[in-house]
Length: 250
Image (cartoon, one colour):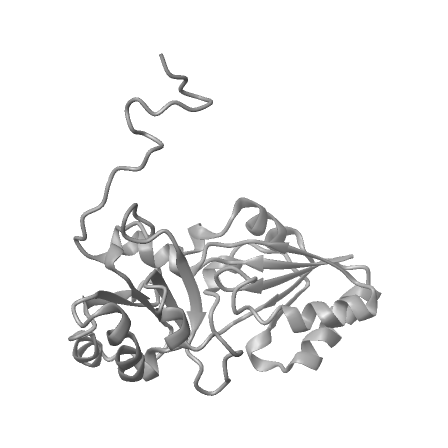
């Protein structure tokens, strides 16, 4: 048997990969993150057992996988977004390796990608930002040395900050010295879910805007000049006169 760690995407059930949906429909055991994965993602499954991991601790999740392994049943372990990012799969994989249970990771659409699509923007623009840093705000759990927000902000690139909405004012205070108070910011709440919403502004006014919206959790903070009207050059890829393998020069 195999445990498939499946990225269900940010919320819209149509944003799961074809492979991920196929595995959900065919695996006899499903363990899903019920607090973050909408029920519509599981629609049409014929599983013998469907387990909501929001109600379980790690050892209970591993026990369910161990039982499926003993029964020779594949497991669809369904996580939100992409399971390789803040999916807490590393600790599960560690146990599976110790138990000799095979696993595969099926990637999914990230909240960052979904938020950029919702905002109608590109996160990397020539002359503005060619790097995107995905991080989280170190509040309840400390960040490793060198990964504090102040360290990352020195690069001036596009930032996607998870798990930080409750500390937005502190985040703004740390970013202003590096990005300037007029730097564009977007806070996207539950991207692609039916109740999705967002606030756009600058570091100077985003805290007030988010307070009016009432966002308290499940929100992504995007920071960077790519979100505004900063001038940028056309990419070389489609520039007339730029030759490459598929478009040779004269």
